[in-house]
Length: 455
Ligand code: BES
Ligand code: MN
Ligand code: MN
Image (cartoon, rainbow, N blue to C red):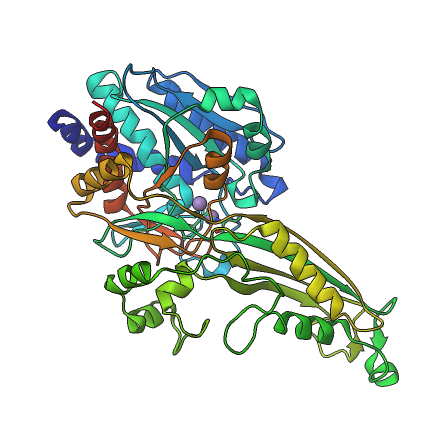
């Protein structure tokens, strides 16, 4: 691998320039005004594959296109599906960014930009690793199939529809998937993620009187939609941090004593955690540690709540609403959870109020640790990062992982190069440039290690 390692060392500046090019494209999938940027980002990614002599195509979807490219089949060697996403989250609140979100800026060894870690920077490590192999050896030691989508942050509708077709299943046939869209355990401590939480994402709309009413004239005799909404949302979790929706815990797989022991052995400090996020204390489901709460237990959180007005007009608002979600653990069915939450909220709905609850979801997943691919990934990470990975779970969700299992019958290696303090989905998103290069190196070694694992 010396030739490839030497190529990587010689290319660091070029790789960073390429990353910056992609980061300059404002591919916010939730913003319809950015449709041209979505297309530009897809073209840019496809152009990377074409530049290394690989056939690449844009697969049309209901939203932004899927980018697909593959390297030739290598007889007797596994085929690996590499998934990533070129779409990014919105950037608000813009005033909190120290440098503009789409003007990538280097500070203190990091690159700051929306999408730096989620997922342009991480996804690109695999593309650049393929380039390194092509440039030095002219071919890859295993077959790679790249699938880079532009709708991950808005529920992957196009990809899911395509994945249900026979054509997609044939095209994507493979032995294992690789995704870099998660985090390391901490700075200098790489990790392989073996579990993700699922999610049931809900919206609630509350309607009261036909129009806003004077709260002096009418207050006390009319059910207030905002009062009601607050009460309803508060009713979803109790003082012990447990979700109150009937049946919510029925399917939950408890954390085994062995797994709790393993999590407790990870070097984690509650105090550092509190410092990192700027809080004096934490709360959560009683009887569980912070890591257990974040990785292995379901939760409830409100993301946005609206209604009324910010001035001091004394009115009873006609309408209010909120977005909230439950993070789920494997085996909890998001559709059932959404239906149970809706029923529970409806039974509490007071007279004079109309309620609507809608939602969509994704399942959680735990991937088996005892396959040869895992061992290969572990060796590759040790090569790239200079340290063996620890095995962790993640509280966030990557919905496609369960769909890969369902549609393609494969497991996914979740090899995250990010850090918990990368400000994912927040202002000042960043990615460590050292980790960017380590990730590229780990990826190069991964293709080598995977080719050894079946020979
Ligand atoms: N890359 C994230 C998942 C993630 C979040 C990994 C935090 C590691 C830490 C992914 O892009 C994401 O944001 N997923 C959404 C899924 C949702 C939109 C269905 C999430 O977890 O909220
Ligand atoms: Mn992501
Ligand atoms: Mn994301």
